[in-house]
Image (cartoon, rainbow, N blue to C red; front, side, top):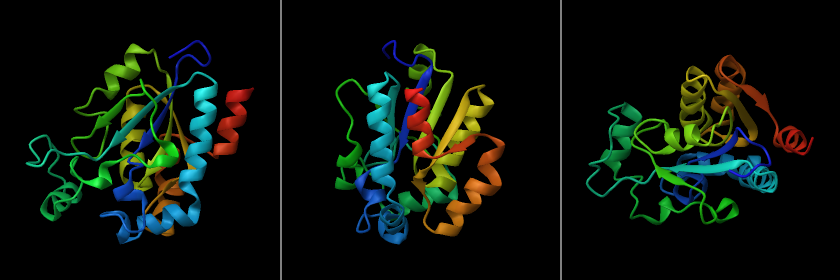
Length: 201
């Protein structure tokens, strides 16, 4: 992190081709269409550009399991279903971060061991080492990785901001429920416009 906005990080969660594209291995089940309809990648790219401009720490998390799923720690039904279907492999094209928000050299990209990227990855030590006190979240799905990350980060004492228009769920209803009914208990809900304006202020 440089000296622009110390203590802040932008986390981009599961913004990868297999999840965000309408023809992706996971995206074809509804979430890819929601990402396109909501303009999630455009919004996330705007947040990313501003975060880079203002010296915010950038980090990525993605579904990228080894072919034997030896690193898969979670036994949650959602994760078990992915394993049974052979989804989320690092060797698949769907593991590639979407080009709209592609990482630059030096921006960490971690492979998750379940839904929550703060468990079993180097992400938490990276945040702690950089003195991060506030994390902004952009990603899919709102009701899975975004909510899991927000809950965990809040319990760790971090301030959490969810960039609502840079997130999506498999349906509009699931996204709305997470944004209105659960996430406000753990995070501030903001638009990308609000986030960009705040960084510039």
